[in-house]
Image 1 (cartoon, rainbow, N blue to C red):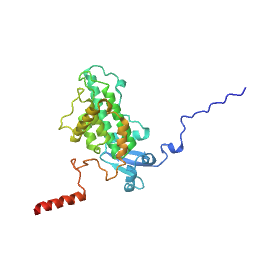
Image 2: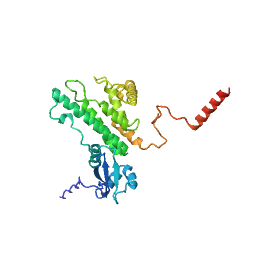
Image 3: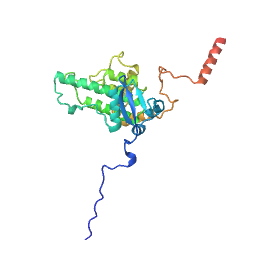
Image 4: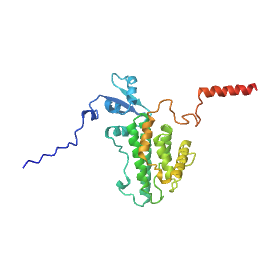
Amino acid sequence: MPKKAKEKKKWSVGIGKSQGLGVGSSTFRVTVGKEKKSFYIHEDIVASRTEYFTNLWPISKKEGNAKVVRLPEEDPEIFALYIELVYTGAIPYMIKNDEKDDWSCRSDADRGHHDSCVEEYNTLCKLYALAEKVEDTKAQIATITALAEKIDDSINHVDCISTKFCFPPVESINIMYENTRPYSAGQKLLAHTYARHSEDGNPLPNVDQVPPLFLFDVAEMAIEIRDYNEEFDHMDLPWYHQVIEDGFEESDDDEEPGGEGSNGAQEPKDDQKSNDNQKSDDTVAS
């Protein structure tokens, strides 16, 4: 009787050399914030994700032969989260509601939940803004996913006293809208959330507390929700991911409608300008 052939062993830890992190590469230093906190990053790891830092290297060699990138306006704590994300693929920012010690119906518990919830939203919005600034698409996608999970987690936890779930607060909205490009995925997710759930006892912020574009986005999304009803899903993560990926494929000529400083009005083309000038001349002559 022939012997039974041995099953081929399947390895679970081995990967190709090209799939390694790149921790054998040289490091460069990033000083962050006014306190100039230093972070040392492997060149190959960050270069595989974004060209933002590599583009700064030629102008950063001012301390001997060392590469030093300075980011004085960034928050060291948020940058540390970004580095955690780059190296581990995870964001250690939040405790899910089912993992919290005790969120029973007590005023101090609800207050604790609210405070931690606000901090988590602010942290994720700052991290998303940083990821967009350094043009790290993978980090943006990871952060928008975490933000959506945070919203979903909050929806499933209603404060016992306020009978509301923790919405992204005014501070988070302003962080996102003031520090990311117009019509970014981060902006859209916050607006979509308010448009979908503002009737669940969570009213919109006062108009003087948030950017006008946020209110416009909420109104636009409310119309889509009305028209498409249940077919519209504001948590459609692949759609947000696609918005992020498309954002870095646009050329300099492909601007969002009503780009920065345009107040919604696009600059007319040269031919249109000349025609308008000719019409003005004809009017004056008549």
